[in-house]
Image (cartoon, rainbow, N blue to C red):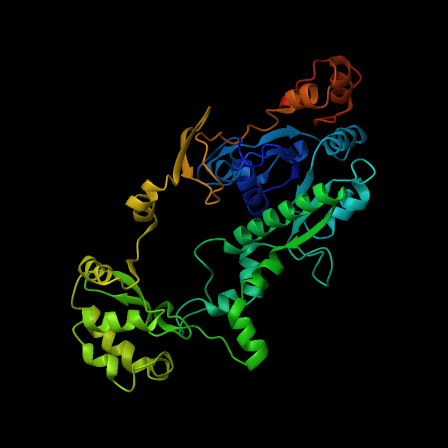
Length: 412
């Protein structure tokens, strides 16, 4: 069994951050039931270009592998009733919405505890459910700017720069998954659920880590560094070789001593300017200028071979294609495949979360509403008459009607 096969999560998630968090829970075996709003065509991630066809996109496949989907209009009384029945038989309600929306939708613990006292309500929002920005929408780009990330990124004489990946979104997803699991542990121990108020803003501020401590405690002003250099460890940065770039990191004195030997300058180890971390930082410009000249004399491959033979932390700076075909990527099984009825073979990256033995096999992301009928019948025990009643009341989308048409919308 996978570690989380005894966990059921009802998810009101969309786009990237929320689905990214629950993706790893699904890969670990949790049953993640996506409630998709039929009024807007379900999760907006289904339509993200450029690799999209109708309701199917590689973006959506990336973040929703292994989940189930049901189309449900929570704006109707009947749709709400189905949602509440799902809450009764689930362990958690997970969402990523604007901070004021969970209260409006009545999906917080106080709203649901009468249905299931052990339910954990994990809300990943842009700015949290309290504070002056709580009603504002939060997006990765906006938050990278607001929380100091862009000010710290890029060359010193260049513009503020975002990370090449949506790391606020992904960090928020990981934090939400951690909070949800902690909440589940406490609920099973104590018999009572709770709210988990998680936000992208909190995650981004929390990841300022030691520069924040330095600033708050000692008045340090974080600044951008040339060639992605570490703010205090020298040398630890990117260097240009004759045919590309590599990263060299001397996080310990022994690595600096080895590096000096590799580049043919062992006398630098005893040079008073470079003898300790503190003096190398003080004379950073002189040392880096010297190293720039040295590294320009050989290729990336030549330097990496020499440095790694001497156990100096180093690596070529690879592009995405090179990273995905790196022998270590292959050896770790980090590229996986699923089959999609429209998109065909989908190759994507595996979850980095490993717990015990990794079971083989991954399931594709769900079609919109694909599991609706099975969930209604098998999980909730609805009979044909009840499903027809819900369909006529537009619980699965569309307009209410009085006819006896078959309940097809539940599977759309």
